[in-house]
Length: 375
Image (cartoon, rainbow, N blue to C red; front, side, top):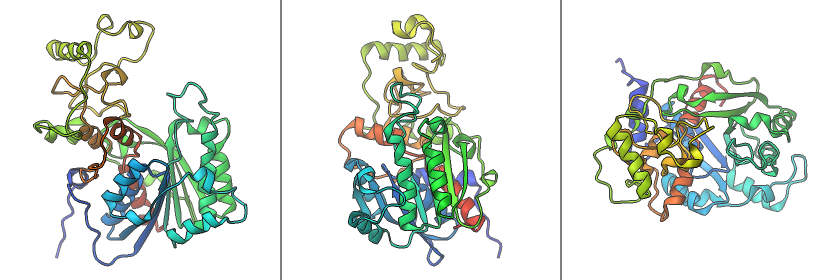
């Protein structure tokens, strides 16, 4: 019997439109996941989906973060409530070579045998939007917490993701983490990846460090799907008559509403300087700010500011309003089954979505790790 495999574009679209967590197939080898600095779980969701596509069972063994609203979303979405822990890893985890602490031992017992360690250390210390301590921020040292966790858990593979500017950190966080992992007999591959090339419907670059046993992953072999657009991600949501936080846009100021109306009346995507606030009228290169998205191009990088036209090109391509959280989540490749039912405030929802790692990243990396017999 010949089995026809749906085109990858259909698989990905079905995934982000799914209202329920796709079930793992019966049988298959097990993938136990630990996610540090997990947020609402973008890395975990991608790893689980990547495993499912390969016929493997995936289980979230442990997830840790400091922010309880995001942890609750992850718990409800994955059903792994007892394994989702609120803790400050900067305080819990000791130095890489230090004797194990009792509090660390309890986390190790919860995690059990670990197949895949995921980590997205806080990126604000590396972000180009941070003009105060960029590239020399104490939070950047949380990268070394990953090496400590690797020493304690001995995972088969490790994926660490961050903003592409992480390599310019004057504290050498990435290099120190890589060196520590090499001391633990891991092989290292690191690179800045274009997530749009991998299949995200937005322009987004992320730095990844992948540590494996035996040999390094070949990142040149990641599957690509570079033609995703705003239309691909959210066109089906255009007719939704939303009355929930999830499906309604932020209420703009009267002045910003006039700016959005003007874009549609003029049939253009960029707001001319005279119509911008005075501070954005001259000597700037931020043409995307106050701009309108185009249906047949990828979105710009989705940030927590997607509800304000003054924070980026976040005006909907077909209506004079900004993106809804649902639309922003789709552009982040976050699936519809993300359970945000307990989130009561728009700013919390925007922060979760904007800070999430698009699951397409770990879908592709887990596929590659498995296909290269590294996990």
